[in-house]
Length: 576
Image (cartoon, rainbow, N blue to C red; front, top):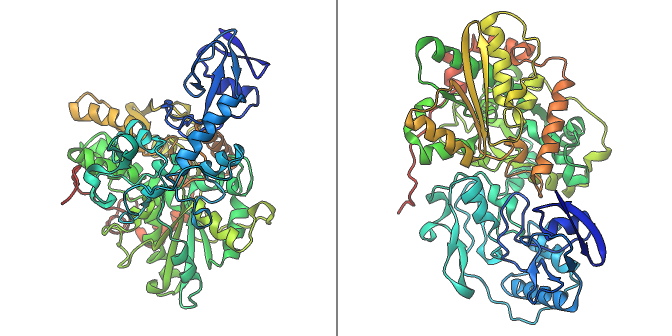
C-alpha cells in the first residue's frame, strides 16, 4: 500500500511506513542529516533534518517521522532554516574545525552539511569536549574532541556487532562517548572491526595510519617491498576515484601500485586458494576422525577477536588456519625468499586490505612463523587511495597490468572470499570434488549467498550430508555461537565474517558504505568470479606447485608450522 504526500508543493508517492526523509529523497530533495544512517534505526539526535508539517505546531525530524497520506511538508520555511542553523551552530561549538589537518577532509559529513546550509560563522564560543586522543589500539584512533554525539558508532557497536566497546557517558551538555571506565581501547573488548569508523560522520574515529611507514620502506633502497591485495579491494578502491560502487579495477590497481614504487604486486587471492586447501582438509579430517565440530572459519580477524573475548570456551571449534593475509606473509619470507634468493630480513611485506582488524592481526605475536613479523604494514583501501592521490595517480585512466608470479595467480573461488558466504562456497567447491572425486556441475552455491544475517546450506558428500551455516556481522555470529554453546547447533561447518556483507563491507573500505553499496560490491565480486577460467581453489596450478616444491601436502607438518596458528582467551573486562 502506498501513501501520497506533498513536499514543498511537489507530490510524491512512497510505500506506507516510509519516513518523510525517504519521501524527500525520492522527490530529489536532500534534507541535511548527521545522526541518520540507512543501516541503523533513527535516533533523531542531531536535529538537522527537522521539517514543518502543515497543521502540526512542532517541527518534526524527517528521519523518524512517518509519511502519511495527504501530508503537506515544508523543508525550507524560515522556522526550519533557523532551527537547523541553531542545531548546526551548537554542533560546531563542540567541534575543533581544524579541517585541513583532518583525515576526513573532503569526506566529512559535518562540513558537507554546514556547506549545504550556507553556514560560514558561529554564534557560540567553542567548548572542547573532554578526553584526549587514544592511539593505544593497533587499528583504531579515537579523538573525542571531534565527536558530535550522533550516536552512530554506539549503535553500530551495540546493535550490529553486539560488542558495546563504546557508549554514552555523563548527561546533559557534558554527555560524551567513551569506553568502559574511560579505559584505552587496547585494554577493552574492542574487536578492531572498524565498523564504528565507517559510521562516524566526522573523524572522531579513524584507522591508525601505516602510510608513512610504507613510504619509508619504499624509499629505502635496501628493502624489497612487496604488496598483496585482498579480494574485496578490487570492487571498491575505484570509489575513491569517482567510480561507482562495484566497479572492478583490478588490473588498473596493479598498475597503480607498481607506479607507487612496490617491487612486486601480488594477490592475496593466491593464499585464499591455499586457505581453502588447508581448511578444507582440516574439515575433512574432523569429519572423518571425530574432531570438534562445527568447524568455524578463521579468515576474519575481527571475528577471531570476538570469539577470544566473548566465547573463549568455543575456541577449539575454530580452524587453526591463519587468514590469507598471514599465510601470504609467512610464504613471502620463506618460499618467495628462497625462490628469489632475497634475504627475508630485507623483504618488506605490505597488505592492502578492506579491514582495520588486519592491522591488529599483523602485530599479533603468533604471526611470525617465518622468523620475522610476517606482515610488516597494512593499508586500508582508504589509505591506499590517499597514497595514490599524494603522487597524482588516478587508477581510472591507467592501462591494465597483471599480477606478478608466483604469488599472483588465483581462481574465482578466491575472489568470492570478499563476500559473506564466499569462504564457505569456495570450500564446498573443493571439498565436494576431493570427497566425491567427481566434478561439481554447478559451482555457484546460491544457498550461502545473500546479505541475510544467517544463512544455511546442506551438501551431500557421497552420502555424508554436511550442514553449513554462514553469518555476517557479529550480532548474527552471537546467535550461532549461543546455539553451539547450548548444544542446539547441528552444523558441521560455519563461516563467520565480522563485518556486514563480509569484507566488501569492511571497516577500511571507502566511506560511505550502506546496504545498497555493499550489494553492488558483492554483485561485482560474483561477476568477477564468473569471468575466471579456473573457479576452484584446488585447480590453481601455482598452489599445486607450492605443495610440490615446498609444503608437501595440505595439513603437512611444514604447512602447520607456517600456515596454522592458535588463538587465546581474552577478558571482556578492562585491564587495570
